[in-house]
Amino acid sequence: MSAPVLTIDGPSGVGKGTVARVIAQQQGWHLLDSGAIYRAFALAVDARNIDVADEKALEEIAKNLDLAFKTHQDSELVSVYLDGKDVSSVLRTEQTGEMASRIASIGVVRSALLKRQQDFAVAPGLVADGRDMGTVVFQEAAFKVYLTASSAARSNRRLKQLQVQGHKGIISQILAEVEARDARDSSRKHSPLKPAKDALIIDTTELSLDEVVAQVSALVKA
Image 1 (cartoon, rainbow, N blue to C red):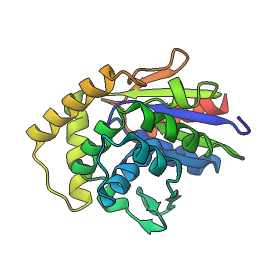
Image 2: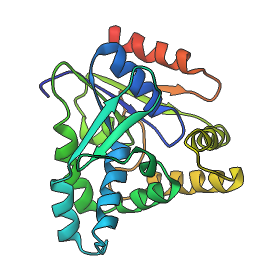
Image 3: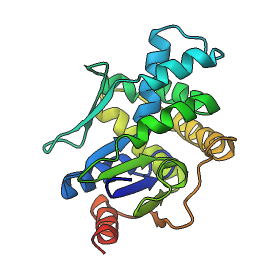
């Protein structure tokens, strides 16, 4: 890698995106939301009415995915641009997340998007958050973190996030979806969700954002 990389992995709802954004701004590094890559890919596939069984077509879309991220100093949100268009709001819906999770289990898709993700590692540095950043995409990363939290806490966070974005949600349904996705992500054949052997594991259930950021910042500074 041509630049230092910090990977932040973990299941949905542990605060990966927010922590990654804050650290990227503090360090002046680039940001990679790998979950957004798969969600954007899912949107691109859906927009083109591609059959998910057509692996050749999926591979072609993955190789040419036009994606960019933009952080904002005055906002917790990160803008995501697909083909030059801001798709941030639709990207975070439960429907898109479910579609992305299912497509992400396809080996040819993960292989095609691997290089696209690694291309983000340029100077002065990169903060990459996802589920296999430290175990697969950036195995040689200088800094690795794995965030975890109880499924109940993560479901409540997801509900609040949806409400901020103007969407509605039912906590029992969100909890069921969180647990189902955990099971699917942890048991999938390709790049299963698990902490890297050399990752710092942080349970965020009872921690504030500032406390989590402080631990991650200390790792990078050290």
